[in-house]
Image (cartoon, rainbow over all chains, first blue to last red; front, side):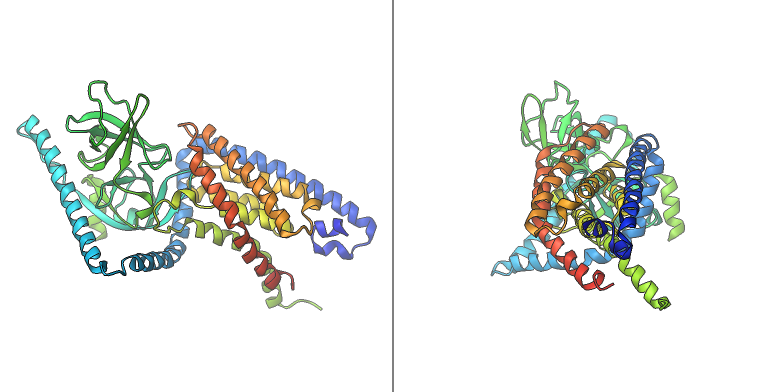
Length: 297
Length: 172
């Protein structure tokens, strides 16, 4: 009886002799399936390493397909999160708190603007007689999926190539840089957060503006690499994008140095992963993309 | 008596129930909670689902569906391709090889076994991602927290699945 039950209920009615034979066949088929699927899995791992473009396309196709479902599923989460937030604020300080939050966001935005201007200014002063930065356009999108748990730090947003989003664009919130677009599908895109193990952002540190690379390691606090010996960092230093390698607009706020020891310089990002709800995708006026947006409009 | 068209459709629908429910919990795991710190320690829902159905309905959750779920999880979560697939297939392999052991065991025993199997799965994922990704091993702390949460939510998911099983699958 256990044998019959083991391979599905239908065999129960067969005569006893056939159970074991059918059982053996089924066992062999299962074993063959297992081994071939394991082989296939290793082949996939190799493909994943060799042909990243193909894999990216597959990922985006799947993401595009499930985005409408995720959009619906994220709705209750947003409502619950709203409800919880409201409960927290229900005390007498509720209104005051809300006002302060609003003012704070506004001020942070202004702070970001001021700091961008300041760093831009100092750069311009150094250059004298410069060309203006290209115009920046932005798209606001909602975060509908948080991918990867502890293994990867990326989120899915509801803007894709139809909104002019393209690979490489910077993704920000009012607080600062959140990450960059790694894959743009038609109606959704994947954002690699600055804390992901694959994230490398050229940054400048402190007022001296020492160049470094901010490398994520899947923890909530990325580290600074290749920091020149002369431009040592100290706790409290602001870290902003440097704009090197044409990756991002210079001066986007990234985070603050929290600890410095012999091995690591640790940065606390201004943007926290869990609070990401709406983000802005910045496009630095790369002509091809702009033309597409205009056509779409 | 020949089954009518609707009976056929009905039984087909019931047969894909384990796969469908697994996909639902997988997507549920991706839904943002908007709570800081929670995203890092999302439970491995697919692992729970595949383990559960491999024990109770191996006829409906064989290696084929397990493989398909693994690929989808890899593609959706941004994990290196093949990592989740490998983990799920090996989990199934363990369950199928110890089917007599799992047969009609009280819930506590299957849970305890899940505690062990899930640890193996997390450890395997950690090693394989470390080997495949360019930047070496990720910190184990968050992974371990995710493991603890996975083990903790197992009874809840298992309870929902067993309700679905008795309501929808056993009568067919």
